[in-house]
Length: 104
Image 1: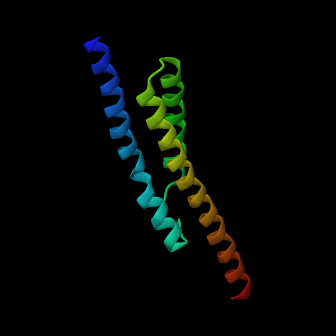
Image 2 (image 1 turned 90 degrees about the horizontal axis):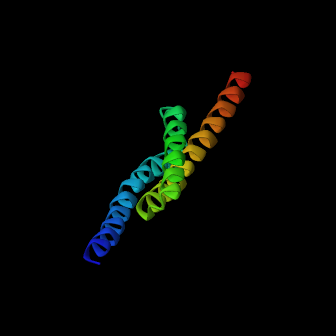
């Protein structure tokens, strides 16, 4: 009984810790959004992170680990938003460069 309680408490604690780490992508998303530029951000970094997180989420589901499922779900959402912003503003920058080239 005590061991089971410790296990539940540890899962909860690790979920909290994992979510706090998952929020690390928010400053990057904010920076891209406010600058409307992603020229200095690696797209491949975010693709690799999302790929790894998807596998960790899958593994967490397989072993029924609340902390892995919660943490990686939150992180997947945050990192996917960052990747979307990076791609969105990269396309805008490319379009603007083409327009400037035609007018110069």
